[in-house]
Length: 484
Image (cartoon, rainbow, N blue to C red):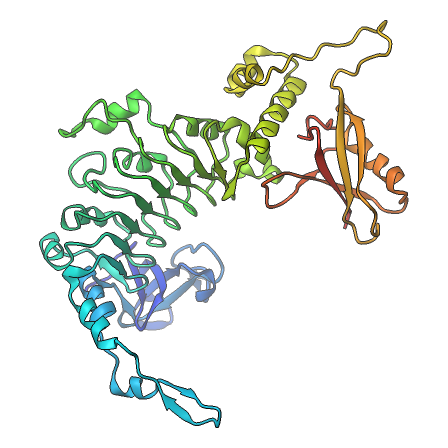
């Protein structure tokens, strides 16, 4: 095989699913000959972290993700056309077919005959008739000459290259050889950079509707912007990458992207047809990234779960805040937003901002771009402190109707209870009140806010926060558990 290089993607010979990256090539102290240091994609497939007998050769991501392997036990992959042959033209041997059987009622072997097998096989052998190809985990490392592809599979519309070795953006070679491609899946190839061949943005792919780049190594949003002029793109899957921000390209960015591109048209709207953007499991932590999603003209389906910005336990924001900040979203984190949930979320959000910032308009404009729009739309007035002479005194935040449900095992089965409480009631005060309401004394309660559409309830762990500040609104449901 060809000499292996640092950074090259390989898999174990005989096991295309055991994939890794070359981190070292050379001698290992105490062992003869040449060795290749591999960091495996699966952390559990290695034996160490890149050091052996006290000598460090490279630093792996975990204590068991690295191995040293002989070069002849590694494969640098095959071409796209070789993978097609392997997947669709390989035939089962007589020995394999003889082993295809079921057991009868008397425990005797009854041979299985696949009806229509030859007809199906003949159809698959005609690559020019293929409209869909699944080449997942076959060790594909190169696309091959475009001229050969265009002759071999001219009608291909869907292509799955999940779990292969295409770490470089060689897939752009497919744009001319596969002119009808509509869906392209590149999950788990560990692509780091998107490198267009003829300009600063990816061109061609005029029919591409879905591009799946999940579980790769994309860390810079500028790389994603190189896809911004794929005019047919409707779904972009970017889950499980290393992205830490989202930005819609402004005029300056568009001009930079367009520089050197003769075919660029200034009136083209970037990502103009993108309606689904999946960003779960990245490192996005800033609210500006959330707000920038409103700039995508048709974006209605968004996934942000698994990011710091959407994890309240890591200082992120709750589901209702995401809904309020995202004007066009219909589906958030795989859950549809009902008109009732949107209305409640927006009202709740406006009231929480009013309570938190006490009418500081400059700060509100800076931190909450949709606040004034939502406040006007829902007809919400600023809260005014009530006069001491007013009888009866009106509470500034009014009363909230809250349903309390006990879920703690030690509390016992108790019917839910609905109470009206001042919005200024603190979480700590509600904990104390819940003990009185349900008559438990020795149990230390823990409160959770159950939000519509959210898969997990939100823990209320700031005892000093008011119910409004904690995101509780009218008709909210609070679960009462017990501390571990």
